[in-house]
Length: 156
Image (tube, rainbow, N blue to C red; front, side):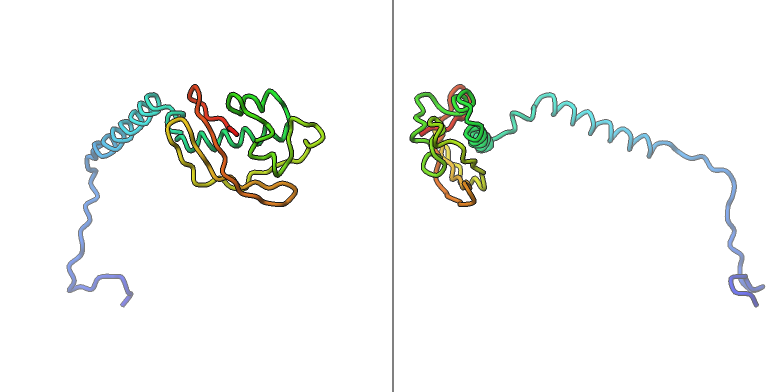
């Protein structure tokens, strides 16, 4: 006896091989669901731009990074744009560790931001703990920021 074959006392299994009508309904339903999801994503993207999803903490971190970049470039225009009105470079959060970029003799030390932590906001004033590295030495301090015209800037 060959395995897989039926024996005379077994009832053969009949397989219906006639053409059957198939429905496109499941595919159309899946397409409709995908279309609804796609339309919802487009509508949400149009009504809630990404810049609205940025938190004040994110904006403060951006302000700190812009200030660090301005410090590293020693560009007075960039420094002015990254700081609040009346900012005194001698009282900069980086003055003690990297020198004063307003004095060319002290400039030239590049700072690297290592970590930003514990942002706190009280109205238009904020603080963030910043760890920076200058010449391989890390220091941590609390930086003060102020929001003016919707933009966070580093203050002294």
